[in-house]
View (tube, rainbow, N blue to C red):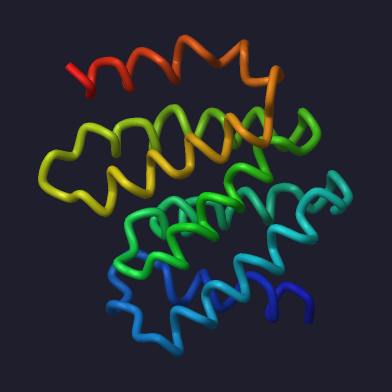
Length: 146
């Protein structure tokens, strides 16, 4: 099925407690994230809960040791933020609650890097539509810079 091909690999590979990714499993996760990114904006609204249920795995992908997985996770999150409002609002809430706190993780530079890349991609994808969320995005970044 479509869900088995698109969501199952990265749900399995990026689930909490999953073993670290080797090159082959990282490529499988990147492929699944890329496919999800391509189809998510075109899905019928009745299928949005299925995509939103997989969002925590994309957030976990932001802290992966594999740079390609971090990049595709950031791109997926940004694409979902730039989608229609019914999908983008829950994703932005997830970004504010889960991704922004990753910037303050002084012990794990991979988490900070993934969060910064996700924020960069979100701002790039949303353009001026990010303005209502600007206060939520700017304050943590400025706090981390001080």
